[in-house]
Length: 314
Image (cartoon, rainbow, N blue to C red; front, side, top):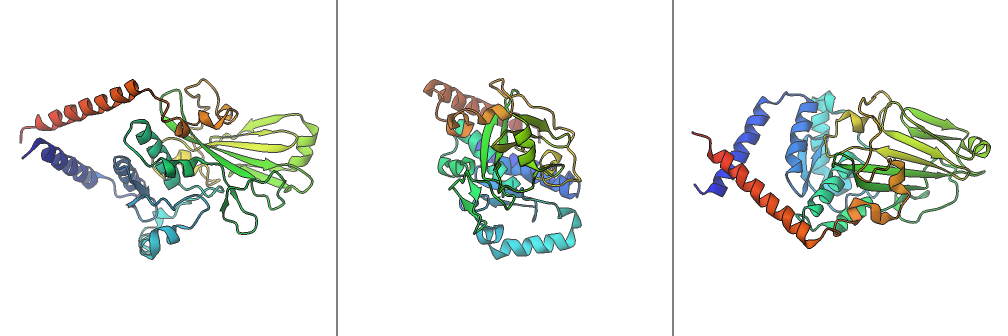
């Protein structure tokens, strides 16, 4: 058997062994298939049907529902799975329209692009561009209004992919609410924190800020707007508490520490500079020499992995 075929065989066998000893819980299954999907450039782990799906470039926050993108067959699988397993009934969508699959895909495509292993930069740009919810159609739009909205919805959502001080890529989101006479009477920063009378508070202060104790959310209030910053974390599982704490008031994350980033700045500062600071937009800034070194390192690691497999005595 050729060494490459043997490596593929061992990958499959180890994957099946891991699957056989996995706890039969929703959390365990999702952790397993999330790890599996991270090894595939065009796949994401679905927390509804507990399967891995192929990326669809039409799948964007607020652009369309899952049914229109992934079809009725997926809806049938979800209904069947939820009927047989109540543990899968978790909240999956943020108020921005972002679901964990968008986080998975944006982080993975950024990582692969940095490593020179992905050419899907067009879709990556779509996942990290500023957008809003149209007041009439309630769907995705790139026309950003600077007027206060009376419906309580945000004026804009801006995703960012940024490397933290530990070298991990993180998915951040800035949500902006304009304040004025026609603004809503309250704003939900997150499931745990609600601001009432933002206009009155803003008029009495030059600047106010705070953080949620139960999820990685912070906010800054000025005379004209409220900016909310959220850290959705790194490549992980959809049932991870760090992500679920942004969706459900009953979930409290114990990992909502204040993260420092590679540039030494805070989460809020990642949105103060030009968009070029976003990792997703600077993946081509590496020199040819650095790219060659990364490719060489991947080749070496692949050979090491193959040698380890061949060292087993069957």
